[in-house]
Image (cartoon, rainbow, N blue to C red; front, side, top):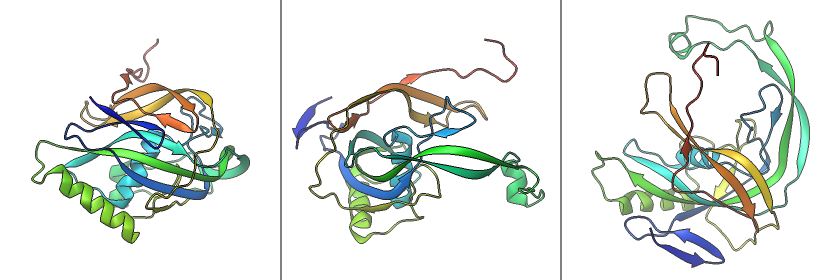
Amino acid sequence: MTTEAVNGLTLRRSPEGDLPIAVQVSGEAALFSRPELKVERVSYPVMTPSAAVGVLESIFWKPEMRYQIVAIEVLRPVKQFTVRRNETSDVAPLAEAIKGSRRVDTAAHRDQRNAVCLRDVAYRIHAHIELAPHADKPVAAYRDQLRRRVRKGACFQQPYLGTREFSADFGWPDDTGRADVNEEIGIMLHSVHRDGTAGQPRMEWFAARVAAGVLYVPERGIELALPVQGQVV
């Protein structure tokens, strides 16, 4: 793996020798929920790699490719606010939802929960495109398609920042400087792999740290086995 310093960033090159593609996103609010806090929603202070992948896939995605996040720049100071949200504790299984065979009574299963969210956020996402074995085009073709869609403002669905309530604007990166954010964040989700057993995706994690407004994401995280339901650990 080779790296290169670009505008004060140390970015790793892809196996093909390319630097990551950069996409800039912003929004009025964001909520990147910490998984260890189950009842109340508390946001990480910065965007997570999984949220960044969600934004990019909303803009451009094909089944023969995946995104690998390299770095996330924080472009605005971290500001928080609290909001009370209505949530439902009754969620229909996917198969029943597709068939329409079950009605979810949100009024009878409504819970009010507080959420600590982020206000007025902006990030620059740096990511590589990785190809699956069945891809029939070179990686440069997918990179060019992503660039064209970003420049045109095209997307498959409206990107959002952690939750669908908080939509994201996106565009080509500009020269906005990084915010002076330095923080040890703790354990953060790196990636989710769907190639495990049915209903048990594999998850990788990493120790996240923001230094001088940059969150660097390692190429691989540490896979942690989640306890099976009913298992005593």
